[in-house]
Length: 535
Ligand code: C2E
Ligand code: CA
Ligand code: CA
Image 1 (cartoon, rainbow, N blue to C red):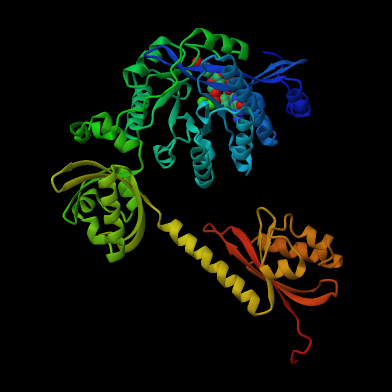
Image 2 (image 1 turned 180 degrees about the vertical axis):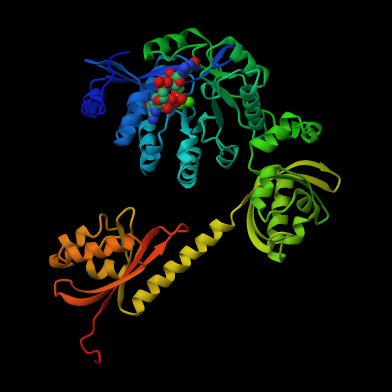
């Protein structure tokens, strides 16, 4: 380990480091601990600076991420990996799939995946020889981007691994929504005695992953005891210092030439093997998982158009809300909470789940009624899986999420946006929104069309004084106006001569507050002051 470089030193020497091979790739094998064969490897970035010596990813990756250079670096790593796989193919050395790390910052760039594909095709590498590692933290700020990325990768045939599972953003619900091909469980995040609580968490995750039919690889495995323990609970794939530290390309090539490999992964057993008896035992592992590692969940029996709820967890009661007791929920038939249309949606989902054996999702509105809160209409997303069947009875397992507020907010937003646009077109006013915290101004369509404003004006109002839309001698007054709004003024107006013609407009602002009473944004409008107004 060399001298740690400062952020500035790293940023300044990045281009040169890429060009001169100071940034390069090391490989760490992934092993099958049952057969001791190599099943894959992970590409890890290294930076050996000629002056300061070896730099480690935990130091330089965050710097590259904060400056968007990570995109370039990751594509470079991918290029090195493909070049290496090409070399193995040409030399006839049997290789293993190599995984590359994808940063959250990579997938924000639209063309990242098409760039990967260009490189892969340049070297003509079968897609199965490349695995993508994504981290759960990519789901921060919404599932949309990560879901889209995952779908794109899958469409192209990539195998996708969920990295750093257990690191804190973990939620089995996230995992369940993302259809990844493998989970990487980092032992370092779950340290502590594997005989105690740490072990319970690990084995619960492995157990749950079997239900999801997704294999697990344990990483950061340093001791034989850890590896044996993992194997004993059904996780045979291991990556860590126990087998090998990350090694240079040349060393890795030598490894591949000398040991036999096994490139196909076995998938784990299905949920149908679940031990139903243990599920009802309050002290069993299954119960622990049910209560702690999933969101709202319920087991119910469906017979002849009727549902019996057999079992729910604590989080289920929270999701459904309405302050209902467990007993109240268990005694109610969810089927009766639907109207005609929603009942059909729900029953179709059950049918599909029973026919295919796959998990099926649906969103339904229900009328719920509780002693404490009275009645209300809520929207619930259910992910349903059939886990048992006997004659005309079906047992389903459902994970539920109350999405009422999301649904409402969405329709409110689309509604208010539509009104806003229509109104401004009709009554000859210019309208916009101004966000206090980001100083962003979002103009209406008319402003964009007539005044040539972009969809978002940053650092408002500086640009409108710079481009002459507002007269400079009104600058102090206008800034003061926005400042007052920011500090809680509810409504302000002023006449300001605008545009090249300096035509007087009446500017009005109304402030919107969040639920704590903090000013959030202001709605602004500008209306022509008519000279022909009666006195
Ligand atoms: P990661 O993806 O979780 O990679 C595994 C890290 O664990 C590696 O650290 C590896 O050297 C280390 N490791 C493996 N086995 C053991 C073990 O038995 N014990 C211990 N204590 N550590 C072990 P490394 O190479 O320092 O990388 C750190 C992180 O930097 C990576 O974590 C990954 O998040 C990031 N990273 C590395 N290379 C790249 C890259 O090419 N692109 C991007 N975006 N990130 C990278
Ligand atoms: Ca990784
Ligand atoms: Ca990891």
